[in-house]
Length: 143
Image (cartoon, rainbow, N blue to C red):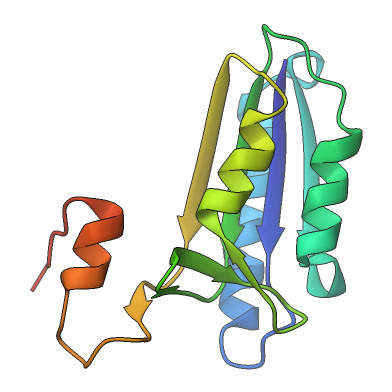
């Protein structure tokens, strides 16, 4: 079974409309391509885009060792001294490393976290890629 959680910060005034499109496109594509008997598909938008809601979702999720987990996030994100974080609708940060730890604790055979978000370095001067490289390992800059 593939357990899919789509998280789209549709509440944000600047990117909310585009994120809604991204979230709906992902939801529709996954719903069409993966048979219902092989997946669960959950969508969090607006006020549900919180650390608490995501944590509770995984806490309550029944997972077998043969299952797989996929989380897709669309919204704001950036880097700080702890690494890449996703900006929640309530203004809090949720670091990718913390999300992965919660997901891995379910002992599924596969864990995938896709974040469709910015990767701005908040604590370094503009143009300094050192912190991003430390956490990502490799940075490709497209021009």
